[in-house]
Amino acid sequence: MIVTVQQHILQQQSDLFPEARGRFSSLLSGITLATKMIQAKIRRAGLVDILGTAGEVNVQGETQQKLDVFANQALLHCLSPRESVAVLVSEENEQPLTIDRSESGKYVIVFDPLDGSSNIDVNVSVGTIFSIFRRDSPDEPLLKPGYEQVAAGYVVYGSSTIFVYTAGQGVYGFTLDPDVGAFVLSYDRVMMPDSGRYYSVNEANADSFPLAYRSYLARLRQQSYSSRYIGSLVADFHRTLLKGGVFLYPPTRDNPRGKLRLLYEANPLAFLAEQAGGRASNGYGRILDIQPTAIHQRTPLIMGSRHEMDEFDRAMSGSLN
Ligand code: P6P
Image (cartoon, rainbow, N blue to C red; front, side, top):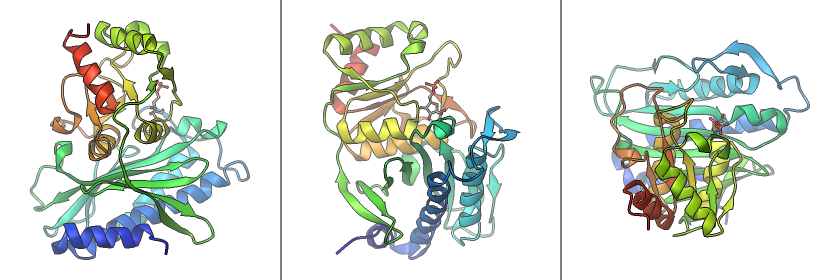
């Protein structure tokens, strides 16, 4: 018998959040509904006037793709009415959206509606990334370190549409079955391999990487690693999760603090990486230990298999022999 993501979440919820009966699963159902709407648009991107830019520039100063706008609206539309939602934070919105300050026992959902959207027009995989925190009091701070996430996940819109999530009890993947219209369990407790044969980094920036990064990458090349870089974070992460190896977005000349966003890219993927037996670092320490200071702040991001991450730590400490 198939196991849908809704059934799985209900089971996880009864184990994990007995006090939040129904609320937590309602929240994740809002996310899966929105991602089904997004994937339907993506699948038809070449057929309807959905390609190209919406002509506007988003808070990141990036030209908004029409699908970016649609994806953000779909998530806001599907999540705002849910009684468990307190605050929504989106890459596409400069400020957080406060939905309900009335009572405690609510959730804060942080998301990147459509990451890698610059790849849309060339039919490369893109993704939605989300991160969920509890908010036990309306007066609680909005910005919490990643280790306080209660759930996180992504949807990768690729050759198939796959929903991957963790609620702190392991990582599970569900493939959208278009005949059923449901996400069906396809990866029951994903574990990242302890080591892999791929490293993933934009080599065009290599001359501006700090020396320790260059030494580390040179060593991987000497050890005959292969390079895989899609330039779409969710796709690069999904491969690393399943095949192992390491993904890096180091500090660069253009982005000395790193390019990727802490709240809705690094934190959720770091939670998943750790739940799958891997690790995630900003070059100095654990991603999940970082205390955020702004909702759109950037961070360097290095994440992957235990072996490659141990080697990275040795490179950063100068003890890579
Ligand atoms: P670069 C896509 O624009 C994105 O935000 C991530 O999905 C991806 O990992 C990164 O930027 C790619 O950046 O500088 O290598 O093109």
